[in-house]
Amino acid sequence: MSAGKAIYSILSGTTAVTGLVSTRIYPDVAPLASAYPHIIFSTVDDVPHKAMGSALDFRESGVQIDVYVDDTQVLPLQNILDAVETALHDYSGSTSGLDVDTIQLENEQPGLFENIGSVDAAHYVRRGIQDYVVWYRE
Image (cartoon, rainbow, N blue to C red; front, side, top):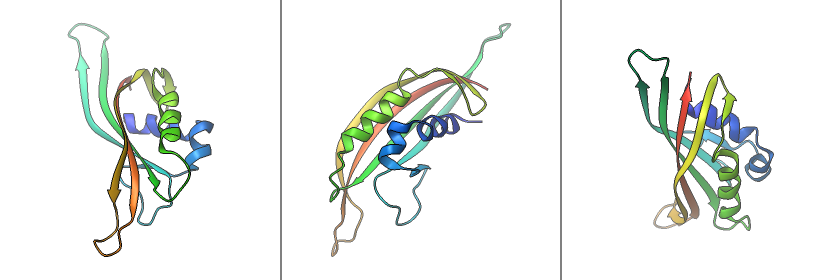
């Protein structure tokens, strides 16, 4: 199991998130020509922690959440970022076979503009990024 599976389970099970992005929550990369808005999550690191002579055995994972909104849409990016933060920040519990001790928001970069088109046919999207640390036990 990985922290990514827990992130997917939490986000896809949160009505406030799915009400804004439907089922468009993807690991690592969105399918080509995916509709907007959508969420992409990626595990950027996963560090095991063990203590000698102790039952302490947990993992610390860094997870990046990228939220994309077509710049022509009225739906504000910040609403989705807020819904994701509400679902994940300070979460603790069991999900997808993991015992999650805590999920903490570390950083947020809202409102970046990116050209996903060509030089001749520019198509801009807004991108928000959130970085989380997930502490869990398998």
